[in-house]
Length: 185
Image (tube, rainbow, N blue to C red; front, side, top):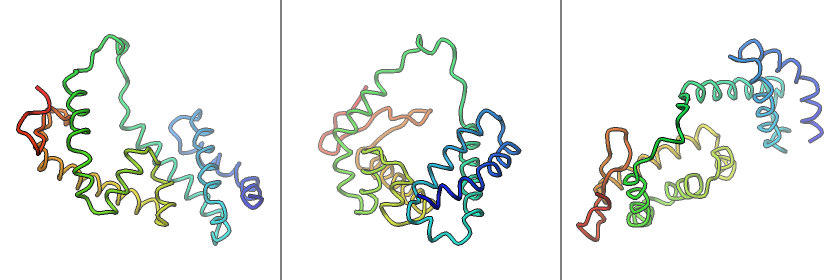
């Protein structure tokens, strides 16, 4: 912890300046800087093994900024009348019924590594960085593993439960394996 505080004291101003020159909005720099500090804090004793801590800190800052820019690019402003818009109940009912009727079976059919990734990250809400640490793999490897597990699960559910999707990619209907009755209208 002391090494982290020393590293942070030496380079925070420099990292802040670097972020200010690259961030799309100056008001986001403090948030990004906080994320960088938290990521460094999560390294714990692993920070001791970092050969070039300053370079590592800048790499974390660059990756954090890149992640923030990606998220910002995918965000779409919500309409002012969002509260008046109703979600189609069929889609919610379909997903709930699918989760109850097919998900447990499909999870059992996945290999142990895929099942663990889905259960920890998607069902229990573990973030990908924590998952990476728990598996002793890099964050990049963890993200790839989780994406592959999700893809295999989706493929398996599509076949096993005859899941159908609407034009927006949402579950619209399915047929449980044990029955020919559809999950939703």
